[in-house]
Length: 228
Image (tube, rainbow, N blue to C red; front, side, top):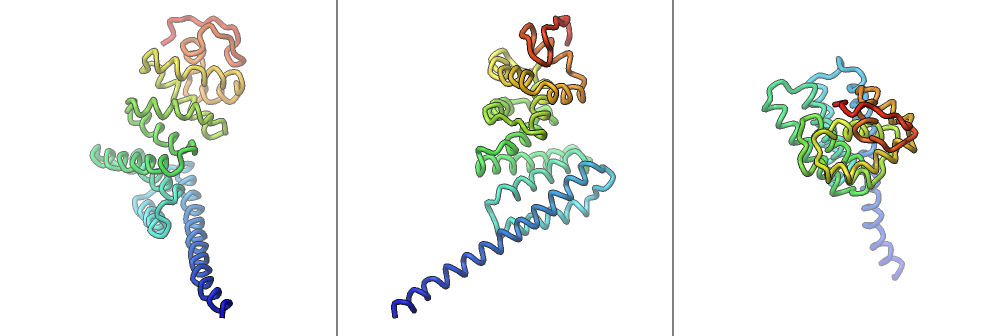
């Protein structure tokens, strides 16, 4: 009798586990496909169309309806609206709408996965692109330096964003963010140099940010302080 009761209790639990596994598997498949499509669009600008964008968005939203607090799915929605802002949107009002949506999704990702650098990085990046360098933006950068994003995707973007934003920072913001840049200039000089070469800011970085402090990237070079 006790065994029958135990089985009756276990069956609903096992069914629940099976449903959760099915939802997780479905969510993973959608993530994998959508990430692949997004990466393809970013590499080949001509492939993106409004209809294709809507189809990917619909698939991610469908998966999210089953897995409501999945940060990877929410981040995908952010990336989709991010991409729409700068690739598909024509009117300024449309750009603003998609930009706000992207920021909204990235903020959700940060809440759900606070130790993951990509939510902060994506939100900071879209703010950089839109010229929205407010207090939230600098807090994002500061938080990212504490998370120490060192991989091949996060490090170049961090260095580029910090360097481009340097002229707009006040002395307190610079003093908080400079130690990270000094550290990467010493520990990852080749990666930093490649990132800066893409934006043509190696000289600016060494003159204005590193200054007189020797690093493996800039050495002991004394660059004209008139560099702007």
